[in-house]
Image (cartoon, rainbow, N blue to C red):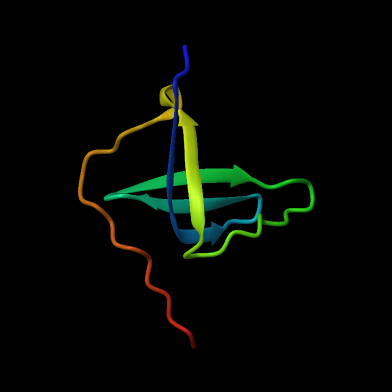
Length: 78
């Protein structure tokens, strides 16, 4: 039985956190968050905001969180 879900979306957020990065992918009207652990060097993967991305995961790894949809993070350039 194949319990994987895959869908194309747009990368909205890339948050580098040292040992890992968090990615927000917009798929239709939903935002999917993913965590990627980095290798020994700590280098993040070269994904950029606005790029096309595929979200693929097992349905057993899916967690639906009820509540308000959060807006994209706002950044300012000093």
